[in-house]
Image (cartoon, rainbow, N blue to C red):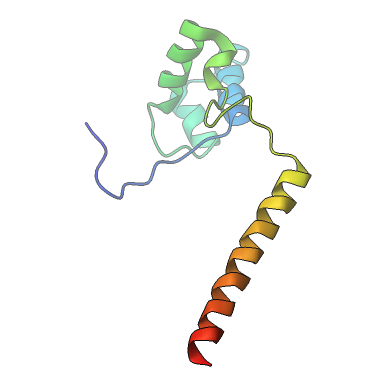
Length: 100
């Protein structure tokens, strides 16, 4: 079933997913018991994680959003902030010159 407009998805951290898998594999807990214990909203979520884990291993849960090669330094953040401040001040000066 496709997502509905404006629908929010629950994001679970990698550590929680690995803990759920550990409980199932090492401790022998059932999927429903894990779902209840970890307060998961979807009762089949652990099954989906388990199949992904069997298919790709622990790397299936790594966060791959964004550009992994891009690391913004503190200096770049400060420079970007200063450019924004300059732009705001230029616009403010234009407004003052129009009124005066």
